[in-house]
Image (cartoon, rainbow, N blue to C red):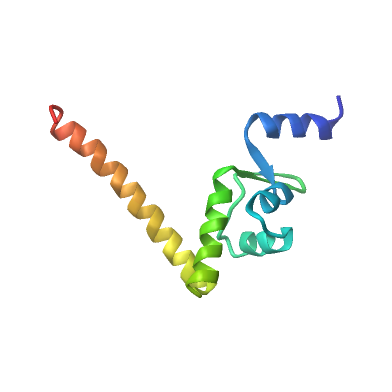
Length: 107
């Protein structure tokens, strides 16, 4: 089995996308996705030599970035702040759910 085939098989089993696959799934060009990677708006979960592999969740993140840029006219710095704040809010929501279950187990 070739190394390339083995990597493709492993990547598929672990639901990871190459930059090109991610771009296609999000309806973008690889160059645009690469720019977002360079600005750290999207980060690979794994980097193997020349390959950057991204989780499936990156598709939705790219779509959010495009909505912020195209629909609201937010610049890249603003996009980064909004995404960070949104992720923090989601994290806090999960913590509140856990705390409610712990403090009020009968509800």
